Structures are given as C-alpha cells and as structure tokens.
Length: 160
Image (cartoon, rainbow, N blue to C red; front, side, top):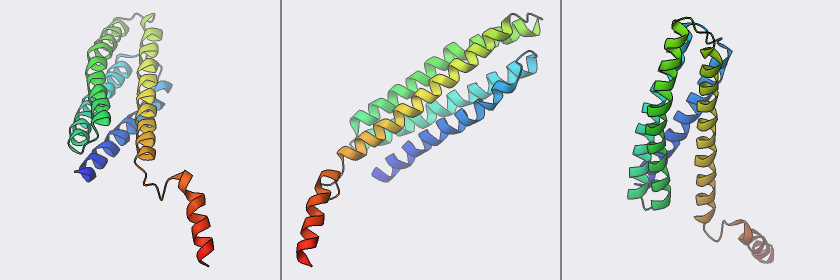
C-alpha cells in the first residue's frame, strides 16, 4: 500500500507542477480575444478536475497506508480544487463573455484571475513538497538520521 500511496502522491505533484508550467506561459496571451479567454478557462477547468482526481487518490491511498495526516492534507487539496473550480471557472467565463462583448475593461480582471490561480497552484505545490520533506525526515531510521551520522562514522573508524 505504501508504494501506491507514494505513486499517487508523486502523481499529485506532477499534475500540479505540469499545470503550473503550462499556465505561466499563457500569461503572454493578451487575453483580449474570446479565444484566449476560452482556452485559459478550459485549461484551468481540466487542471481542477485532474487535481481533484489525483488529490482524492492520494488521500485515500495515504490514509490506507497509515499516513493519516498526509491523507487528510490531500483530502483538503481535493476540496480546494473543487472550491476553486466553482469560483474561478465561472469568473473566467463571465469575464470571457464580457471580453467577447467588446469590453476591454474586463481584460485586466481576467489576467488577475489567471495570476491568482497560478499563485494558488504554486502555493499548493510548495505545501505538498514541504509536507513530504517533513514526513520523510520524521520517518527516517535512527541509523540514517542526520544526528546519528557522526556516531556511525566514529563506530566505523574504530573498527579499522
């Protein structure tokens, strides 16, 4: 079960990183045409569905593997993906419709929503990685822990 939990957590990180790397270059779009707005909206819609699926899989597998705190954290990420999808996608749709109607005043608003979504995704990735680093440090065996390294080095030096 640990292997499945590890794979699903890596898949969650890869999904988040992939969409971050894909969404940042979209900022070069002027967002002043309906096609730009529709494409960016569709891109984030796919991301939120993928984030929900991978976070849910990670939450279940981590909980079953005994990592209840990480499983709970992944479940929170799944809920965040649902919440953001319900807030950001309609906002992008509304602003995209205003852009299509010729309202160029909506372009800066669309860019702000786009940037906000990217910043949230980056924060999620930082949280995922930092939690995994902290858990991996707490799960280290005493012989491999950084504080045990000098004792191991001293012991092996005495044997020679």
